[in-house]
Length: 387
Image 1 (cartoon, one colour):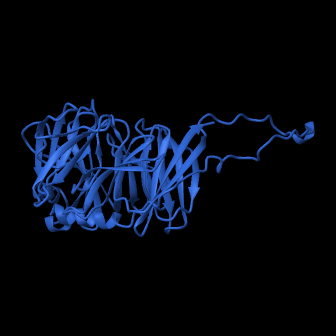
Image 2 (spheres, rainbow, N blue to C red):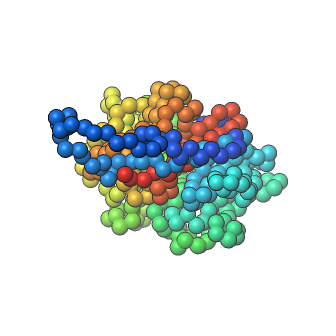
Image 3 (tube, rainbow, N blue to C red):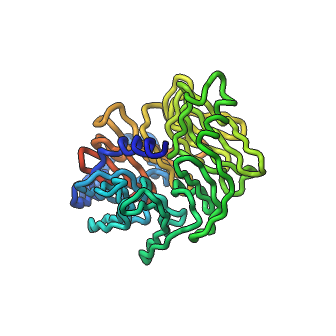
């Protein structure tokens, strides 16, 4: 099951790129011309007092565009100079894990013959990955320390790592079971709860109207857990349920296994927590496609941005969001905005018409984005600040 699903995921990433060379185009977006001019304006020409630039407007300080001559299947950002990525390999799994230094285009392999995915710890100091034996499909989990590049085998994670959820929790999936671990940030972990994939499908079918388990498909790469400090304890999955999409919460406290329907809608593609009781949803609710804020307490939702949105990323402080809009590969826009009280503030287009712009990730004031073509990828690093 997991092997076929992983192959489907790779098909979605297989055209990613990078062509080799760095272009610093920091002045591309600066407004006005070089130099200064003094212009005298008569009193009659000034209708209102000049207003100061708001302090929450985005300014682009610089852009780095890096070309590489291989596709990138997935990536995440360790710091402003370091990107961890999946790229092709001739080994059994077809994937290797590499470390890219953005400013000098230096590439170093961390491990070959690994499972798909880049799983960084919340502090971005450690990397978890699953590696296959050279001549078999036996798996071993490892932890890579980014500072000293030290690698240790982690015997306490029986499932391949899927995603960190909060500071101390990790969701794993081994092809048959979803497992939630409590981890202390080292190589040890405590098992909290396990749900079988087929078990979860049956539980969703039981609370869905006239839907059989054969019509349900869980998106294994789209999961989350209740935020730290929450009164509840559970993890969330996105599933295709018949011709609709749903988000479901599986309880992990207590002995009894339970599932709760959070929202079922026309089509959902992406969800993330921001804050303790709010989610960002990308997809179609009713007849309207766009980006939504969703309140978990009263199950209400609010449209933040209408339109064809391909992907989004929210920063660690839940205050800034980046998202892609467009109707085809060329006519697209990369937006950044502040997220304040369920409203997008200072929504700004920072780039247009990048071929096949796809993945996004924040690190502090830096926004990373990738686009792809056949056997190539471009990586962009935008340095953003307020006026």
